[in-house]
Image 1 (cartoon, rainbow, N blue to C red):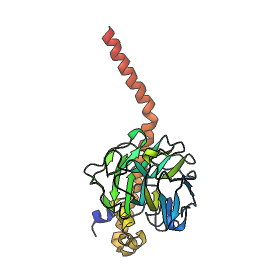
Image 2 (cartoon, rainbow, N blue to C red):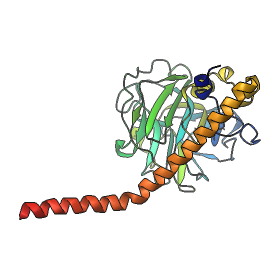
Image 3 (cartoon, rainbow, N blue to C red):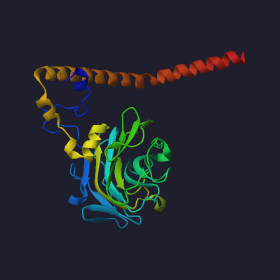
Image 4 (tube, one colour):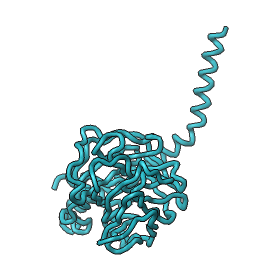
Length: 294
């Protein structure tokens, strides 16, 4: 195994396998398997049924305005992945959100939306389309009205938004901005683009599973959700490495951690200096005006 192969293994976790709480990178912060009920399996957060939504045969049934709203999220969420298994009643419906993270009022949100800007296409919905663009070259949906499909959207720290369908990249990613949802000030919704619920923007169909991750998963990790048998845990990878490879991996991990720490320090410096930069820009602008007037 070469140096580049070890450095680029997407299934390497940010945390050590010695951490008993999280030894691989596919642990969500919230996860609903509706076959087990309305509470998520991680924190016990309840999805509250609204306007006729029901739970039947292991699925959350969402029709004729029926939707679900969770209790307030006890965690902050910024960089993230929204993941869901959904079947639609029809491919002609427009602008319904499968799963949405939003401020409690719904004024700010990010959502997996179907058929809003383009018919039969998935997209990342957001308040006023502020973080929304169609995924370039994304194909129209053709089977979700007959079977469950897996849809995921990742939101990276640098603002990159990437869509996935059935384990594969959906169109091409784009870069915009990232919104941070504050602890105890946001909720998740199912079937509604955002709150307050609008009859014109409701999803009609059913959801079997839904998850939220606190980082942007890689393509191989998204594929592992779609095809669990393809996933290899960090512990299995480490056990397969020779002594030389393990030493190299440890060295590369230390270098990565050092670079990430330096990047965070630089980000803090840029934010701290922003008012000074704004003052300098304003001074230069005023100076230019003064010279012009003279």
